[in-house]
Amino acid sequence: MRRAICTALIALSILCSKAQANDNEERLLTLRLETRLDYQRHWLDGTTVKENTGFEGKFINIRADGNITDNLSYSWRQRLNKEHSDRTFFDATDWVYLNYNIGQWSIAGGKQVVAIGGWEYDRAPIDLYGCSVFWNNIPCYEIGASAGYSFTESDKLTFQFCESPF
Image (cartoon, rainbow, N blue to C red; front, side, top):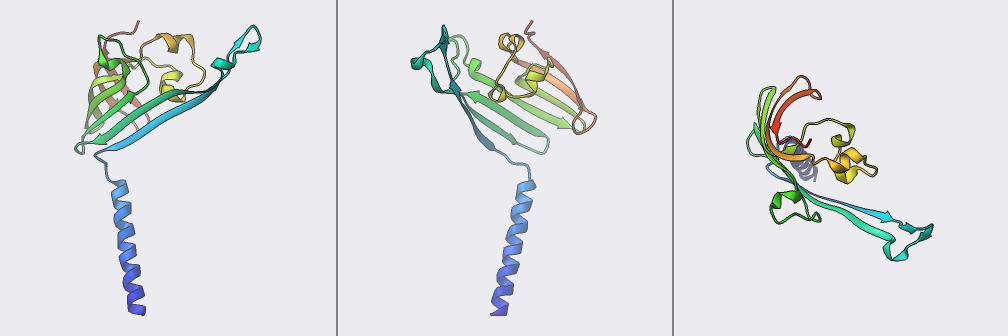
């Protein structure tokens, strides 16, 4: 009986160590579904308009990220409830790009977040509840290329070439 228990414990510890090793490995595909529901209350002259008041779906996104090789990664986020014009399908695509890392350097190309700064662009639109006039009127996703140098884990200098939103 002791031998069976010891064998089971050893097998369980090996399986747990394999699961931890797999969690630390770079994944080929990480798929996420992002959604947000808001309660909207509409007033007209101080009176609630009941037909336009209630819960409303604001965002529903699909996001896919992963690593093709140790140095080559990709990211894609598509809004499922954003209308796009007849001229381009990419209006509803926030970003889709490839990124190649060479040591502390990285090179990326595709539709990216425009590197214009500002505190609102540090977060996804799905996470913002009160946005400024600037944020509401600047297209922050454009097709382009960028090169960056990472000084530390959290500090990176990026040079970007894309169509200017100004």
